[in-house]
Amino acid sequence: MFKEVPVLPVVVPLAAVVFAALLWHLRRRDRLSAPRAVVAFALCVYVAGVVANTVFPIFLDMPSSGHVPWNAHLELVPLAGYEAADAVMNILVFVPLGVLVALVVGSTPWWRVLAVAAALSLAIEVTQLVTAHLLGGGHIADVNDLLFNVVGAALGVGLLLLLSRLPGAGPVIDRFRWRRPSTQP
Image (tube, rainbow, N blue to C red; front, side, top):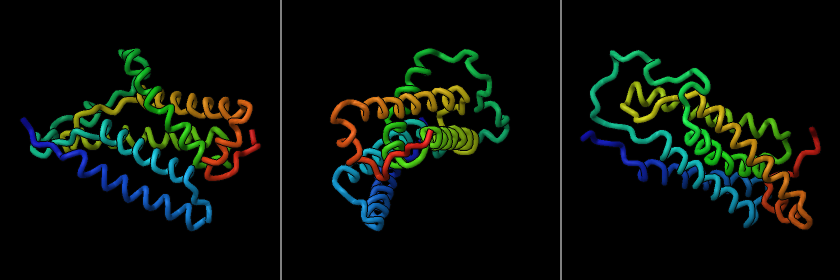
């Protein structure tokens, strides 16, 4: 059995620091409110959970994989051998990100929310590739994960848009937004 980097001592302090920074950001812009603090907290818990489940395990004493080519930890062929259950899981995992990012950057067009989701997903996949090759991480970087994560974020943005059009829901949702929603296409 290999020794692992412990997950909670890494992600919990990281999430706490990010939460404090987000609250400071809101306060500095005179936008701090209980609903916006809830969004900041949910975003930190969400990202901590995603990091814990996509980057870890990282092994401390796994034999070096220096002789293994980088592409051994990389899947670049879309949809080839990709399981439907993995697609559904990746979609569901990123739906909350679409909602949360849309609340945080509400003054930007929907496609920018998807760009943020794609950037986060790409960062996860690159981290998985690097940790698998250099640190004995337990994941493979997969272009399919990136694709279906963005689909999930798009569904999250769409869900928030639909909910905001329900009678009476728009003003409630707007209390959670960090900025006013965009009227741009």
